[in-house]
Image 1: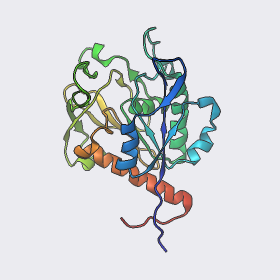
Image 2: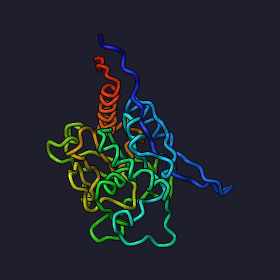
Image 3: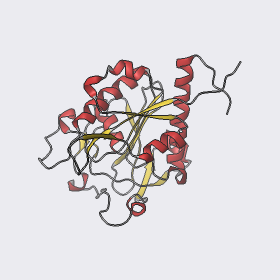
Image 4: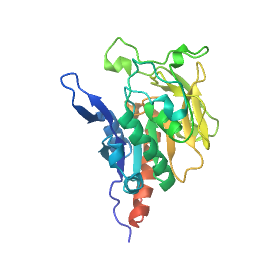
Length: 264
């Protein structure tokens, strides 16, 4: 007998945030990421506080059907990939770094699907042994990919440039196109990709890596540099990435529970 499939559980690690009104730490995830998991992947989102020292990562990974990695104001600290130290004025989030990086490795080890957006692609790459560029706009040959300071939220998150997908790669198949417009907004970017990963797409104007996939993973393990959670229903590639992630999470949930997957 084929049972109805319960929604898979997807963990979303939080950023640690200090609100201007007081000095108490908050743990937060933007609603657009929560909606991406809920509406795009068809899963139940669960916020994971940035409490690295409190977790047994093997146990935490075993409870998840998927892991979604969000953007964030802070960048991954360079000591995690043997890079030069940040300047003193750089925003940091050590609790998130120390939660997310080992959790990614554990989820990959256990076959938990992983999807990263913006900072998320950088976390995946660093966790698995890759490196990052710091302040891409200061490197010869690369454009300024940072969010514009002026305009409303719709303007700030609007599509910025084309990406070129790898021929016959996953992104090419999901988009049914070699070129796709994306809303890529970032200062850091993937430099050397981690072992076992392939480049799925690059920025058309300057060749910055915009999408990677772990080919040695048992399941979906993908990072994108753009904000795939923003208006994803209007972008075929982003929408189909969420669907593919959700499908992988449902397979994981079914395997963990011993259920068969009901036909859509």
